[in-house]
Image 1: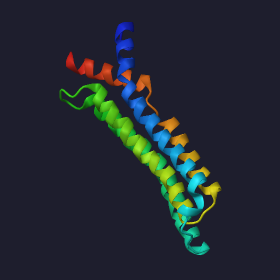
Image 2 (image 1 turned 180 degrees about the vertical axis):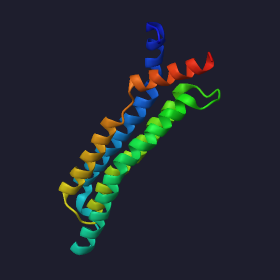
Image 3 (image 1 turned 30 degrees about the vertical axis):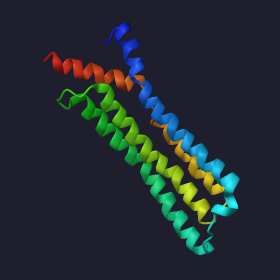
Length: 158
């Protein structure tokens, strides 16, 4: 088990992963603000039937993105614990969080794309909300990080 001092030290290691999450959230807000401010200038409407096809495909990709992100994150967390090398745990965990956030951010970008293609704000909000939900689900978690540190320490002592 990590001691209190080690846990306090490792909390500061999570600052950079949280900065990544905040940057991704700011990007989501920027998409929505841009659409509200420059909506008519941004839109290049497609015919309704083409938009519906594209929207359906993007919804299917968004649905697949969530379990895929969960699987990739799970694999990365196990690799963080077991992969040999001198790479610090914090840089490995930062990569795990960054990959998760990029995958989930893509769902928010789908809403922005659909808005540009002529959909209304409702579609933008749905995709943005899904992306924000994913960011909440795959946020940096201290317990995950402590588990990585403990597993790596246990491997060093073997």
